[in-house]
Length: 194
Picture (cartoon, rainbow, N blue to C red):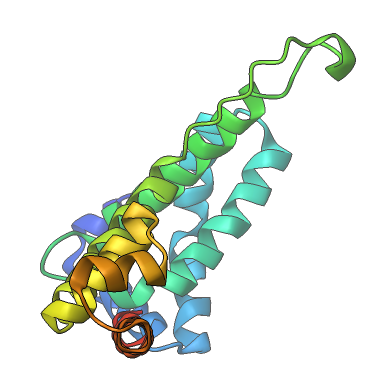
């Protein structure tokens, strides 16, 4: 067997062809995506099959892998990683995810399983909450001082408009105006940050 067929990544021409197909796929070139599939599907299927140890599951995971590749190909940077390593990492991670979810399949009937729900936020939810909180605080900091103090006190300390007006020694209408204008500016800032 020709060594260039068994190890296409070692052949500079094969690697370049793969890089070009992957980069073009990132530009949503369907023909390049087909070429990419033809060049890599056997290898990626082998990676997935070794992890899943189930042919049907490996075929399903391979489909998910190519959907992911189609969506993420634009993020591939030829100078940072070899194309086959980048693709194999996606395949490996997706297969591991499948394997983990397959292990979670309950072996005890649901009506007999103990109630052990985990109410904690997932890592993604936590990251999103942290990002939203950061954006909120940055936008709050961009408000006029009077508006910022009024909104923080009202929403974080739970004070009413009347209590805010009394604390700041301003008429109730003025306090409502500060909060209303501040909330409009805050909304615009958060919309721009999204």
